[in-house]
Length: 90
Image (cartoon, rainbow, N blue to C red):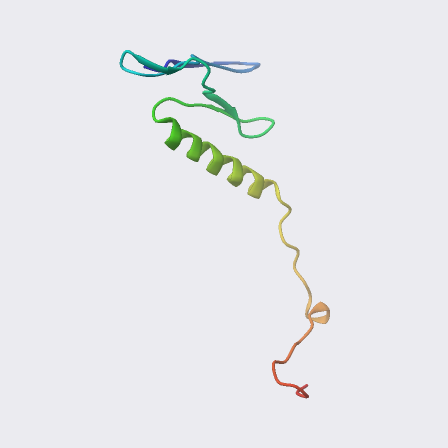
């Protein structure tokens, strides 16, 4: 069983989770990370299947990095170059 808690206040959010990976009474590890930072302002606490959760965290991190990239600039027709696949064709 996993315990995760999120508390929201006017100044921010606090996330907390236990560090144990268990299935029933079997404890597989006592040092599992269950809180992940997606970027400087976003974090996620996970519970459940670790492999699925880690996949989703990595996917969310990649999406956040894509959103942080600058948008492509529009180019004018004067800046475009035309290339031909036939030799000698202009």
